[in-house]
Length: 278
View 1: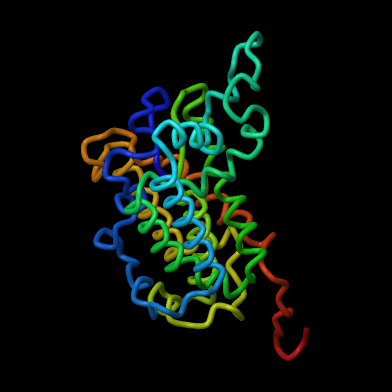
View 2 (view 1 turned 45 degrees about the horizontal axis):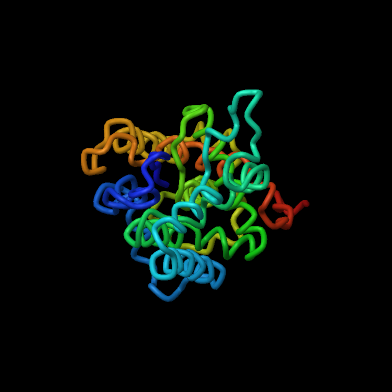
């Protein structure tokens, strides 16, 4: 997820190192990088499809649009906090996309990226932590969870940047939601991170929200993950010296949304048998 300044059309949606996902989630910085060692081609089809969509949108913007057309495209489909705090005498329809963009922006910004490195970083983490979720939920529920998580990230970003003319783009709010959902599966039944990443998660009973925050292992994961986001986002570490190039607020919001609401998108499970009784 990346934040870009609204007024400068020369750099909108581009610029920096374009690595919101890479900066905040670089595998060299994470104790849970074992997820990245899964078989390269053992990725659910819905994830491959989303990566193709992300790449298609990026290629369209890079090769088929002029800079001016690309800027207008971003204004229509990126998430823009300014839309929601206009003065009473200014109509929302005066901004590109109007009311439709205000409604769809929390979702459509997920399909825009600041560059190919940004896109690849988000795709890598989606494949790593989204795969167990996709295998469990199926493609439709998976996409719904990701979109809702992206919207949750945008909402938290909005509360932290109310009225600011800063474009928010990137899939990492949605990807963060998948990560939040996945830890309820990975740590189920007392498993460690390594054990959870190398077992079939389609049949486990997920942790409850309360268990996720109270049990030591998932709680440590959450604290480390949030700490890394604060480090890279708030203090600008890994962002090429550009403060707030990484929209850590959207990561936080997306992560918590996926963690809290995963059960709404999970496939119904068979009831657990206790002592031979249902």
